[in-house]
Length: 259
Image 1 (cartoon, one colour):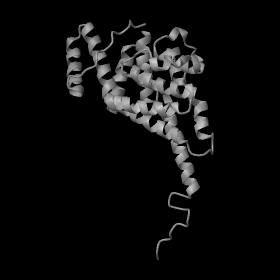
Image 2 (cartoon, helix red, strand yellow; image 1 turned 180 degrees about the vertical axis):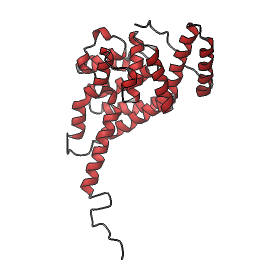
Image 3 (cartoon, helix red, strand yellow; image 1 turned 60 degrees about the horizontal axis):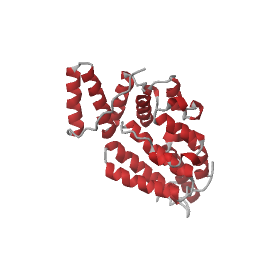
């Protein structure tokens, strides 16, 4: 007996409307992941992109921006600055097509957060230029990333970072690996990092093969071991750094005092 063929408009994956709906759902999920670092501030954006439940597929600028942000993140974490910079420019240009400050500001905060996660922080200059025209939640997240915790309204932060700010969760307890690295970097900038958080950042970066943050956090560990007089540990860490990076090690920042 011959196998039955799908009826016109159908396939093994469902009808064309079902496939379009599945693709729209996939894009909604992917876009949410791309902006997970500012999730609490992007709920309205996610709804707009998806036209809430059952809406049409995401517009082309959203699809393009999502793809570029994903490639930016992957390239940044593996240490490929040239590709990361090019992909970020693409993502920002797509978001700028909307003429909305908050769209572009969220991408700038993703970049800022990844720099914090990799111990290459700056003052988020791309975001600063947009700050007067964006919602308070985005400004709160920027303050959190840049270590200005005394000015942060924790209620405006994404839940995982709100808990870090309040001291009710540890870095290791966060489910998302990028959020763990961001939280550790934010703790360092705020002068509240402790050795377990540093160790968790190292293990998170190592488990995912994220060369850039791994080298940075290993360098910080080695710096602290050397300062504590633990030469053996510092030498072991230096050999591990050489294994990962062939000697191309980003300078670890001077760590603020632990509180």
